[in-house]
Image 1 (cartoon, one colour):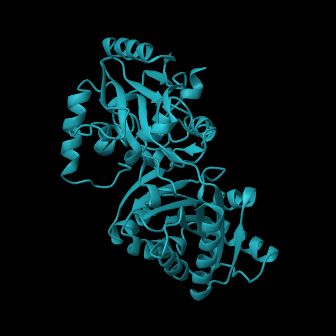
Image 2: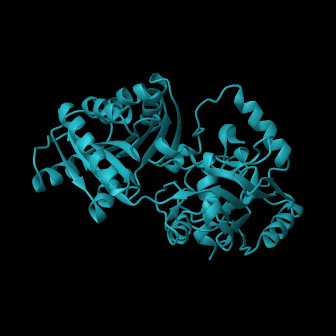
Image 3: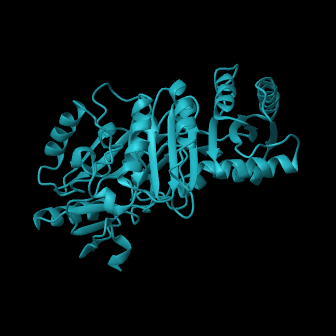
Length: 418
């Protein structure tokens, strides 16, 4: 069924489903020799991210590359094929009480390669860094089928250029990621989430920064604003203590360590929240905490407009307030990662070009860079969803010319319609 690979209104005539790296190489070599353009597919969870594809003749389904190539628990290293899902990898690592400290939305569907190609960001980045910081090696297949690799499968590699970083966030426009070597870590013994609610984003942000800059580093500190956050705050307030305003803002603090350490962290966190004048808070465990963290996940149905921005953490607070108070939308959902300045805005309503520009201008005014991750297709055709990158864009164009001079892989999808 080629319809399941439709992208930007285009349905490819050709589908390739390689199940080995050698077959992936052969497929891309054939597509390149035929002068066709290909789009790489993983779980499809973030295929809406990127500019409109300029040409699209063949879909390359990577999900057949779904095996662990090498796993050495004592060395804290795993090598995995790009088509394996995040959830499947975490399940295997969990058998040894280990994990990849990287979280994504829709982990049951999201693949390793797709998550790297889209440079997915989750709440754990504040403590463990981005996914690119966990990669120690990578093998790739270039557009003409040439197979190469960089890095290795040990934590300490020789000095040199970290070529793998070029392909993380490139939206599959340079190469096909085939296998990836990750540095992994131990899984936490105990996890708790402290969920608090405030009457304003400013109050929640102040509390979040106090916790982030406190005596210990939480797993994650995330601020959520909008109708969904207010509804969740009212639900938790009804079940526990305190009250929640009609425009309540949620602050989620994830804690993970040994039992005694987590207990101490919970006490410190709740004391900080009390001093920051939280309207109320609860301590959650088991499924209740994961239900709370769903606030930071993908919305269903999908919003009409989604924008992801990166600003200085201090500027993120003002940006959350500006986006949450907009009168242009029927529904607003804002997710801000305290500590590393990523702010997501998800909106429902009538989305016009003027509305998109107003949201983008708010990010620019906050001194940040942004990407429109989702918007109506008729608007997407007429804009570059990436911010103005300035001088680095020319470097990116040279990279595209070096790796894929014929424009075989996802032409037009990257910044500057590369």
